[in-house]
Amino acid sequence: MKTTQAILISCAIGFLFSSCREKTHTDIRSASKTDSNKWSIEKLRDKATQHLDSSQWDSELFRQDIETYTKYADIFQSYPLNKSPFPVAGYDYAVSSRPFVIETETALFKGIRIGEYESPESEKIIDKLTLLILTNDENSEENSLVESRNYPYLTAQGTFNGKDHEYDWVFTASPDGFSTLLVNMKLFDLRFGETILIFPQADQSFFYEQVKDSPNNYGGNIEEFKKKLMNNPNVKNRLKSETNSK
Image: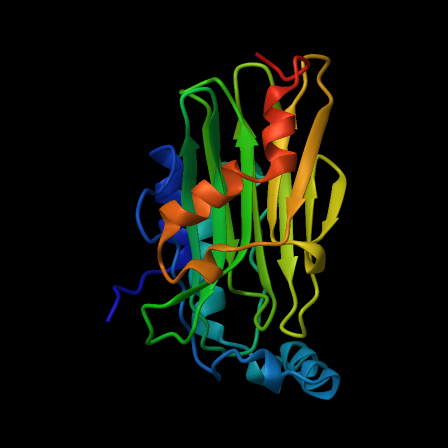
């Protein structure tokens, strides 16, 4: 059984120490396990109605969120979207954010993996997004906040700060299979690939690749996933470009 911790506290502390390095940002409350097969449009509508009903709000959770926000407001306001408190109906949902690095002899990618636990009691994480940014700056910083409060929707956001480029990103995933990622206002429909690679350019623009692959396909063998990505013909061609930021 994994250790359960409040997302706002863990994210805030993680931010203060650059970022969490292990199985981070877990938040669990009381309702039902996420299963995309169970979320029809009618059930999504019912859940939205519950969130509007003050009699179903988790008052203790709301009070804790207000206290945490008061203490860490500067941190939450530093993300692309300010994470201010709001009331929600009770739920049971565990989410995950993990730093992700790929390093080869000629390239360094830094990024993040966002996902959800198969159930709050499970150790198995189902990845929903892999975001990687090419950087030659070993000191570049990635900060992320993954959010369970919008259950049954998975939401996350973060920043990536390198020597010559900065990126803001916001991610949402619906249990009916629709998910999107915004990176510096570029929208990715993740139905066409849950792995996004960003290639910063010397002129402050960026190129990108969207790969229809995921760590979910490798049975826990993350090194095989990395190898497959680096052998992707489109990725290899992007890495050869002379216009990439040095």
